[in-house]
Image 1 (tube, rainbow, N blue to C red):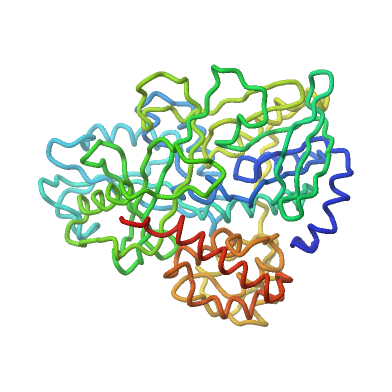
Image 2 (tube, rainbow, N blue to C red):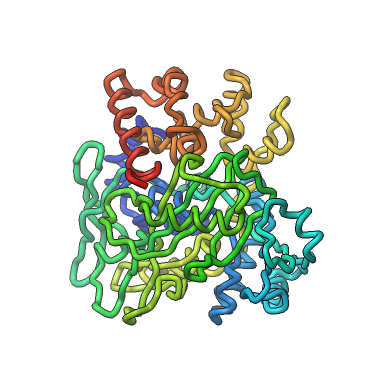
Length: 527
């Protein structure tokens, strides 16, 4: 298994740039990772380039849910819902410990929408697509035991159903690792400056190494863009094709402050939009908003003071006795969804359909929109569109995205923790076991993340900056107070040498990271 870190990247970059590629994928989120995975499986010579860091954009700042999109049934998006439900079931089966079932509760109130009958009817269709009954109605007295602390004014009862939850950034890393296991290559910190065109056809690209400012010309038989909200930056776009960037923001609370055993789905009293409060990584998440993102896409998205108020109001609406306030918030995150819009005036953000689109020009295929849950199906659709330039066909081979992790014993760890580690790290489990023998099985702060996982990421997961390590390879920058500032001395002792940074570089990275965290992952000033 080859080393995959910054030292490897520096040595490998000139050689990778000199190769002729079948496919170059632009964009290192879940869509790009899925395309690389399916291309590598088929033996294509394929390379992925990401301008910032893997999962830096939407794919580390989603609502963390692997779901069938229940509300899409009501919008008539039957195929999207069917495909999502089937892919959810596939992921639950292939990646236990990374994608886990999560029970949801929808409380029903007198005069509220949807009522138990309507919601039960929708869930019957939802379950039929999954091939099994997956919901149950609880009358008021039973619901009070299932969901203590729920607002019970005019409460009739509630319906419990199941979807799934994941760590979206770890999902991207695991998919990339599977692609690399089949011969694919991936680089972060590579900004594509322009596409190369000859006789009206894309034949490659020019990319800049953000770390060194050096530029490279790379040639490829076809290019696939999976850059989300950035989709129109490089392609030759027509005026009728629009990406509407929509921001979804979240609050994260300590788990003890609002302990939940289930996710709760309800409609915000202010605008009727669905909101979720759910357990994640031992903490509690409140989200999401849905509004036009008008800030520059080149900076980390951040929550606004108005969104903080909106989400706190939602929490108070559903859990009034908890008295959740701003001081309870550990961290925040905001992501930008790349929604394909028809440009109709007056369409509310929440009314935009979540269908995807493929835009094709000679030698280049651009994916716009799409859902995390269906990344495999999107990848196949992109490869079919790319195939004519490679002179081959693309069938759904039905193979797994995630191969079974190696049979590695992790003695002393609880079974749930072993399941978690196998799901997140896959074939890297062998190296993780060695690090556990060296470092022990202690967790960082009050999180479930092991110090050994942090060391593994520093050694083997192409970390270029401290925020890569603390916000995406691990989530301790979100889960611990002040972005895990109190743990930085221990993190330095463990990771500085593994990252190959001298003292000056470490201090620069710490200052950069803390400024980023205060600006984009904490409560906004004045909120």
